[in-house]
Amino acid sequence: MKKSILAVFLTALLATSAQAESSSPDTLSKILKTKEIKVCSPGDYKPFSFDNNGKFEGIDNDLIDKLAASLDAKVTIVKTTWKTLMDDFTAGKCDIGVGGISITLARQQKALFSEPYFINGKTPLVRCEDVDKYQTVEQINRPEVRIVANPGGSNENYARTVLTKANLTMNPENLTIFQQIIDKKADVFVTEAAEAIVKSHEHKGVLCGVNPDKPLKPAQNGWIVPNGDFRFKEYVDQFFHLERQSGELDATINKWLPRD
Image 1 (cartoon, rainbow, N blue to C red):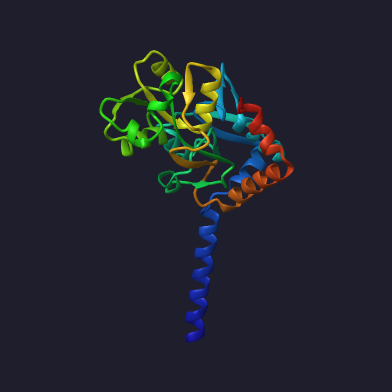
Image 2 (image 1 turned 120 degrees about the vertical axis):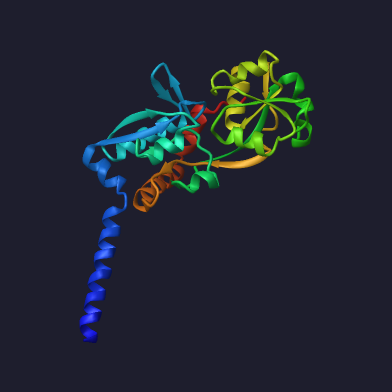
């Protein structure tokens, strides 16, 4: 009798394990079968991913092309926004999310992240004549300081949770936000160090990043992979390991991140 009960228990346990295994995502197998990797990206964030008249360019796009080549797959970009990024990803519209995505606990609750491939951090972008005025959170977080942010990402979260006393204006998207500073409609845009460096280079002598090598809040960038798909995460992590060890990761970053 005891043996019969044990046999029934083991059968049920094996069935449950098999069902759980079959219901787990297997993105790697799917990509190998379809020869296509679908990539979610907002495409508005230099130097990581930028929609240049329909062609996505940047650090992440060069890297995702290499990842796809290792799988003999083509890349299909699924354009999203920072506000809808996680909803689009969890809805299964893409296999991986890229584009300078900050690793946050809120995002980690909905999906897995690859290992970090870039160290970043919140950095004020201001008019160059105002660099000395906005060195610290205390200098920015005041009612008379006009800050601007784009919706849906970590920039908005930082503005709303840290710079609570500053005068916040929301800009609909990221592409035109820099002109708000140039036109003196806003004083400070707190973004990531990499973007502050790029925009300081593009608008030399007009816009300046404030201490991008010492951000107000350090951060890391990673790629989003489906929740529970540890096999695919391990593959992406190993890809980054090999790129880093060969020196190709630094070469790709340096290609798109100006230093002058």
